[in-house]
Image (cartoon, rainbow, N blue to C red):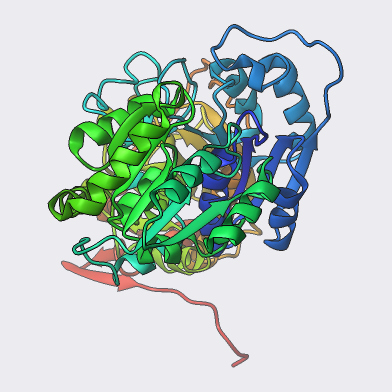
Amino acid sequence: MDHLRIAFRTDSNHEIGTGHFMRCLTLADELSQQRSEISFVSRDLPSHFQHMLVERGMTYRSLPSLNGAETMDELAHAKWLKTSQINDANQTLELLGSVTWDWIIVDHYALDHRFEKQMRSITKYIMVIDDLADRVHDCDVLLDQNFYHDQQHRYIEKVQTHCRQLLGPSYALLRPEFKEMRQFVRQSAGDVRKILVFFGGVDAVNLTGTALEVLIDLNLDVQVDVVIGLQHTHKSDIKRLCNQHYFNCHVETAHMAELMAEADLAIGAGGSSNWERCCLGLPSIVIATAANQVPISSELGRLGACLYLGSIQNTNLKEIKESIELFIFSQPELEKKSRIALSLTNGNGTCCVTQEMQNKMRVEILNSDKNHPIMSYLNDWGASRINVNIVHSANDLLGGYMLYLVACGEILSEDVIKKFKHALVLHASDVPIGRGWSPHIWSVLEGKNTLTVSLLEVESKVDRGAIWLKTKIKLKGHELLDEINDKLFKAELGLITKGMCAAQEISPRIQENVKSNYFPKRTPKGSRLNINKSLIDQFNLLRVADKDRYPAFFEYLGHKYIVNIEKASHEF
């Protein structure tokens, strides 16, 4: 495949928070390293996030702002969208619909199968990033990076059977600096000397201020680092408190991994930061600032990876104070939380997700004979493309986006075919006319100078699949086998390339129900010359004879003689 074209549909504001956008940006950064073309579709995205996209060479496509009341759907988070899914889908299609996308990635609690189905017309694949498992999706990959004791069952009947589910913190979307910093951290041991406070980029109810109030009251001999986002509504007050009490205040920092690695204890929210802290083995006191954070943080608390205090509505200053004192005065508790947290994720999640996406885009070519003359053409063609795999046995097929059968004699099982979104076969005839073996050779033997090559869907009934594409080859009647093959192989590679690029636009045609001839498999006997006929009469047989596999020959006086012909390269 060539470099991927990928679009993200996500939002960020005071109500939604920054987590959805930031984890999408983390994935987009990794995909950009692979030279993918990235676009973000959002409504009223904060300006500093827009600048972040522009600085990275990504495209921001803005949905129109909404004025007045809009009809919304019944989903629990429907108000996040500010309109209906159908309206949002239509507006998104207007922004994206002029090209075909390899992936559309949706990270939005207010979108489900109704939006995703509308995107099918412009994309090869859809990925959904979710945490809730509270709605039905129409997607090819579903990513839920959170830990649940029942995670293997949460999306039953919410995604289709073909959907690849990436579940658990081994797929956590963490920026590369967390993986890099992990190699330098060790399980926490010793006293608490540094405390990190971070409640997300928005922190709408100012839990940061609450935590600072507790820390100021405790008057501990520790260094305190406070991280807030540009959107924090109490930014000025927090900066003032930090200055007064010699705390370090970091606004929209790019050094979060470093701050976490240096800290001995964190106080924070239960969103994506959970996995950043776990990656670096940072013991934490967690308060759920939104309903979706409750089950995630509760599971981590049950495992012993953090001290979970509950939701924001059920947490008070006294509990926060007592929790800080617990870690200050209990080294074993600190060590236990650090050890368990470190075991949950290693920071490779983003790479794992991008690899899964690449696997889905893989193109494989199955050729039964590694010595077939087309192999040099296939190898040259594949060398200039990303994620193309050429194999000679169905047992070696990995699965992916497209499978092409090229000079393939194997009959594939349904299980193998299901590994691919599209399974296609090249056939050198004008199907439904000319089914069977080596139809182009039989056509030349019949004296034809126009050959047709067809690209078909693989079916259990050989050569009867729906037709994707056709192309014609013109001969002049003098070409020898190498020259015929050159034209044929280039035409076949052209069909392979066009099929890859235009798969979304192609409407396969069912083969007409007409009487068709069937060409038998050629054998060495098929290249026998008749010594009683002239060379002119047998020229087509001579020029299509394969000197290595099926050489032309004649028999005379009890002996067999092989005949090879080639065009003279100069005048005698």
